[in-house]
Image 1: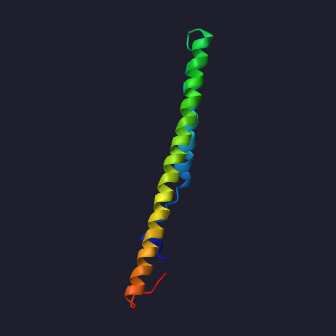
Image 2: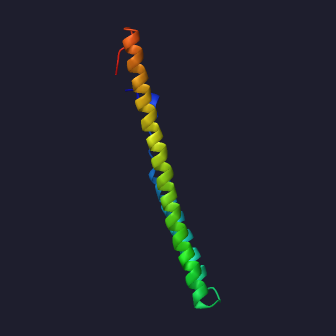
Image 3: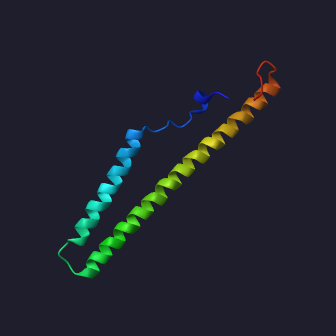
Length: 98
């Protein structure tokens, strides 16, 4: 099979991975510190903290779901293309099957 034809996912550089994790840690830390030092009653801080945790959790779940859907679409497209090539090769003997 031709990798260019099916578009394999590009790998990320170490710099990009580091920047991504650093930005995640800094944003969560800054928001958490902001909630802790907010001059309000403790129940409000708890509510904001829970909101932060649920937001992070749902963001992770959403990104995983979107990635899984895209990967399944790629696999289905590859299967459909292989079926089409097989049908065409049976019709025209000059095309070699996969």
